[in-house]
Length: 448
Image (cartoon, rainbow, N blue to C red):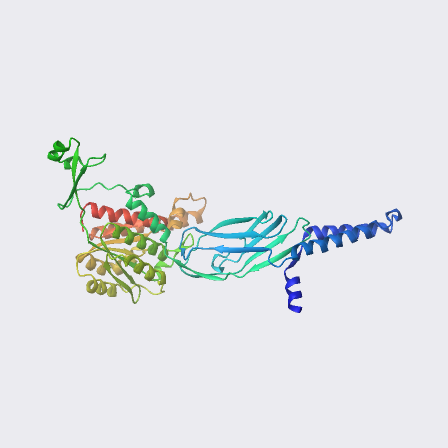
């Protein structure tokens, strides 16, 4: 009995309409001392408010199973993307009710405003949707769904607690990966920023004869087949396949820098996952190496159906370390792991030319045996400072320093090119598109 009473008053909340009614009753009692003609009106009014209060409580509590709510989530969340979460709500009350729903989302989002207000008619159900954008990989714990119900009287509200605690893993951006996969399959990558690369040549492995369509190279017209069919026919040739593509991810402290909530490491991980997916679709072999002061994960390049899942599981668990990268260890790892010439896409970051000089001897050794592409990031805040007009001496000083760092990034690109190393200097949000562009360019020009 005590537990029942405790559950009753813990879930009963007084509404503003009740306080307004009680306040009016107090005012009437005060006025009755000065205006005797009010008589029993204050007592009648107060009694009516109390009666309506009891009726409201009875309406809300007369049946135990009056509401139902359930959270509908995907099996896992995609890091850096908008993930849709749904709440199914159903009312068993025989009258219309006003409903407020609070979903206890994981603390990582630091949001306390996931509140929905709606109304339900008798026996009605609704589906409410909202979006969550995680910015860190790992496990996210959801809590209760709390539903506050008001009857048409709206004097009190009853709270329902629906126990739906669950833990969802946040994986690297598989939503972005699927988007690029669909575009690659349908040859529509240019719609999301991928450049259309003009081929400088074709491999000589014949594939088939097909009808000419707009955009086909007129030099591949097969005149004999055209004469037989009466339609313009062209020869098609297969791209070089089974080339090894390795993503190398730097996990040192230089990749901890945040941008729009995500660290540079997470941007590199998302880009690596998408690049591996596109490489597998192009029938190349995708592999992965992670490095910091210690040797990280190594996945040899393969094109098995399970390769992408293997890469995703490894990337899910990678974390930043706070020491500098051991480039000598990276060189020895690449020499022992990569048995043939491969495309090595190295995601790292340089903030100064001196930082590059420390690593350059080992990068030159790697580039001697493999096609090395360095991917590093623009400091967008410094770039914005360098473009702002200076209005005082302090502003001139800040603008000059910012311009110096921006210029050093350009010097890094030139220095790498001088030693035959390709590079991509990109804003973090564009790293995926720019990396895929460079990969497709390398394949089109048969540089590997």
